[in-house]
Length: 143
Image 1: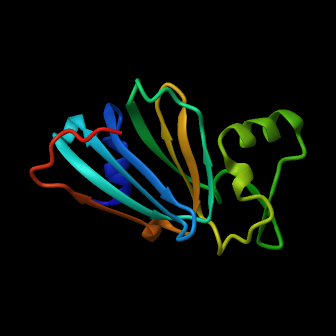
Image 2: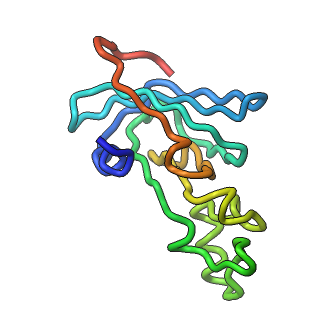
């Protein structure tokens, strides 16, 4: 299964664990993906991350993986914000501002974990920065 296929199946998932090591720029999280009946561990390398302020009581969530080249303008291969204020605000709400001023070779996608609020928004170099594996025999783990 590819990361795109997996992300498309996370619509009714439960966040079991979330950790970020800022010294190593390393994000780890575990999702119980209901439609697959699998517990999947994710490891993501990211220097640019923003955490939301979600209620940890409500752990239902889903992933989004968004291509920046399809959604942002560039100048000299550097991502730039929209000059239209409304579009700029929309870009910021989606976390695209993590890419502003960065080269297209540095960041290609935004990975977002969304529940009742945003758990995190991470800018990633490419899809290969996301590793995932099934945790066989994994039970429910507390956040």
